[in-house]
Image (tube, rainbow, N blue to C red):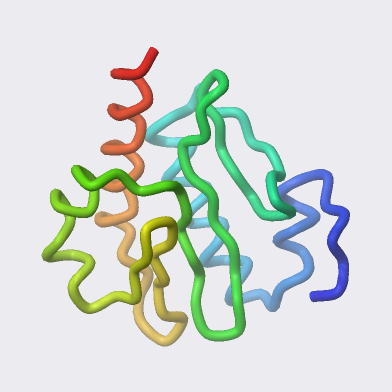
Length: 122
């Protein structure tokens, strides 16, 4: 992926194979269903969603996985410990393997949790 001047999420998606685009569209749809007020932006040259001045979540695609990113709180990591146990996780990223079904229910719960965290800050 050589291009690094994305202006929209669609531009970002269009640089990937169809299967990866479909997975990213599923994530985008989940985010919009949970937080319809979230603004779609490109930040750090990847798709991101903001509520007010707070970033809700980012995502990015790679050859073998899609990462969901945010500075995860300890509360979030604890709340989803069982869902995260078989995934590669850091303080700011969760890798969803490309060779496994997209965990849509988990993604929805994760976005709901992040939305609640943001609402509590405002």
